[in-house]
Image 1 (tube, rainbow, N blue to C red):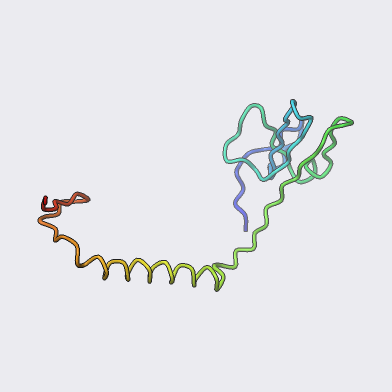
Image 2: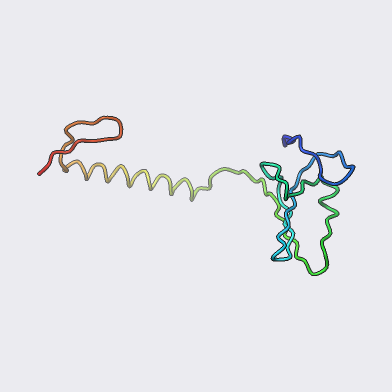
Length: 116
């Protein structure tokens, strides 16, 4: 279940909970309707379900509607293989770097190496 933000619709006399944020880009004659923004801002309008579905813009303007797709299925097999290969590569590079100069001391993230 989606947590409500506590913000209300910006439309006059509407007391419904806001679910989307409307932003106007006047220079491009574009209205962008997307997911509810993290913070309420004075130049954006928070809209409820009803008002976001009834949105109309001036003639000649474009509307961009960004929908949130919540298909959290986790990493794919390709993602897992890429991670495994990256870990394997780092592990193999550590083995090949063992022939390098030994560390004299280590403190936090700093290392002291012998000078040649």
